[in-house]
Length: 368
Image 1: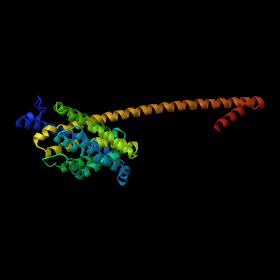
Image 2: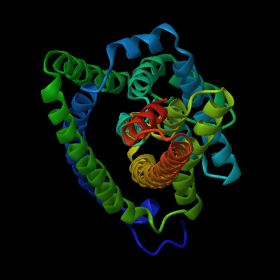
Image 3: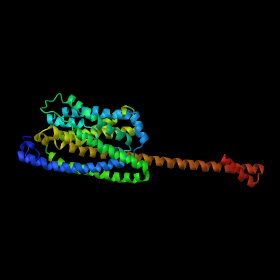
């Protein structure tokens, strides 16, 4: 940091007035971003609620094996990955705690959209997001207490319980309305789902653009911190999929758990940073949650693109196989007809059977 030439990239070189002005400008941008994000997310969750099957959702709640594996990934795997990344890259305490806060946060609702595009189990995805948000009330303080004992922190970390409540409302209420619309007007729900898919694409574009704009100020910051920001969501997706695979989950659930594990609630992390640290400390790490949101969106697009490409190749290969099977079946059928005709013709020559009898015998033989 002593070698920083740009005051925007090095908060320690800023005066108090410049620091306050920079935080206010960034705060206004984040406020606009949060409002747009909330409105679009409500629309997306409403449209995804139109795909929820009540019976299937109840089966996940009654036998929560998939939910249990997802929660193990959420509050067992992600905090451990965050701690190992912070230790491996020798991050300063404030940056290490920021990474850990994000690792202990519940799953983000953007994972539900990723699950829908990856042909995952949307009922399981919504159940996991809801359960992880509820359990975050107790699991976030517990995980933070266990993993931050090795770091000397002067201040106490404040869990944003009001943000957890808002997240649950923005998740449960739109989904409940979507379920009701799907029950009452199933035809209209398909139209709503298409509109929601378009809104979902726009939502991800907003996240990426806003994250790209806010990431400019952090390009000159510590390279290890940026590397961790990129690696963390990708490792969450990969290890979440592997853990689901080891517990013998179906492929559909493996994709769902993978998406849920890598997608974290970045807004909750940002709120917790503002509640727990001073303005000077927040200035050092305020871009991390949004950068994580940018990279988790980028990684989600990449994973979905790979899956959709693989799906199309398998479909094309299956169609070619069916076409070859149909051709072979047609050849065998024509050969059988030709053989039956030749046999009957020879039988007619030998026994003097009338022509109409030959034709009738041919038809009966083919029918058999």
